[in-house]
Image (tube, rainbow, N blue to C red; front, side, top):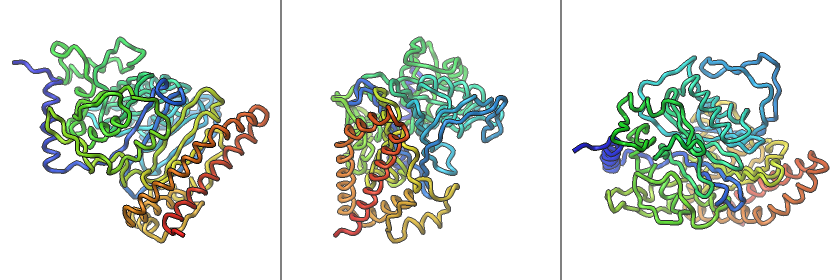
Length: 488
């Protein structure tokens, strides 16, 4: 009896998953992203969110980069030597930078176009690269040049087709106030993107999630021209046996697709919002309809999911896909954000970047409106290079002292101290973070109304109001951290 290639893929995936569970070789940590369609957001606009997980030692900087103009003939040089023409003007953007890491930065630009990513290995073993390929600069160029998410997807696609992507594979989350896209790139010159439906929510956890593809529907799908033909040529897809093109089944790395951490984290996240129960397993939906509209607070809860997951066993495969060892938020989470991309007010006020340094389970989400003049000085303090293990350990394990001039180090040190102190300190840290965040949410509307009134007559004064406010919340978070470790 003939068996479809996609069907064979799933059987192999199940076998690998079983082996991983027996060996316990897979680590349950990794980046995690969320896209909320505008019709199921409490704001009425897209929300995007992300946990950035990277093994220490690390450092994270946050800064706001202004618009820049360039003379005719200027060129951009990629890290591996490729070159392309510079545009006349690049847009302003918020930049979350992890020095020394090629694929860990995130951006939100002045039009509300956000870019972040999850590592999603592919099966490609014969990549085509030109002029050294593109990797690090891909998201920067989208942030600098795109006014919409769709424009960003098409730009990224052109860059990948021109230079070739240097890493195994990745899913870039590219959003604007009205659309959220998952852009899946494969080592070399192939890519495919799907738009998240306006009434659904999508989540990604380190393996491709785009399944059934209809390339004739260009409102929902965009791709390199030969995405199907190349798969057929490589023997990964047989259109005679599989009329529907399943991108993940065809292009994903088998071990990544079978890793119970990836399916477990995606399943755990979807469980917070889904309208209908989802069977745990390896063939999870690309997106789901939620039982109610969600806002930043609900997304923060998902990003904080740590050891709360109970064992969930698939009735069909008998494979445990989520247990207490599969946190969405882990000790490797270096920074996290939730971005409100609201287009019903000036974007300087409508875009809010809720930023968290360190693991969200022991840290604070601090709001930064796009209209701030810049982040507090301490958010870009420290080395421009990835720190050494010796330096990282010395700082993180030193005595805790809140230092407004060293944001990342302060929150990393706080995380270390709270984790060492145990469950009671963790619970107290969570409680204080929620108190601060609830207070901020309670006055957000009043603050933004005041800023908007001022914005019409004095944009600089409005920017200063928003800047001062964010700094005030930041200082309150530092005070709360000090109280957690030194209760009075």
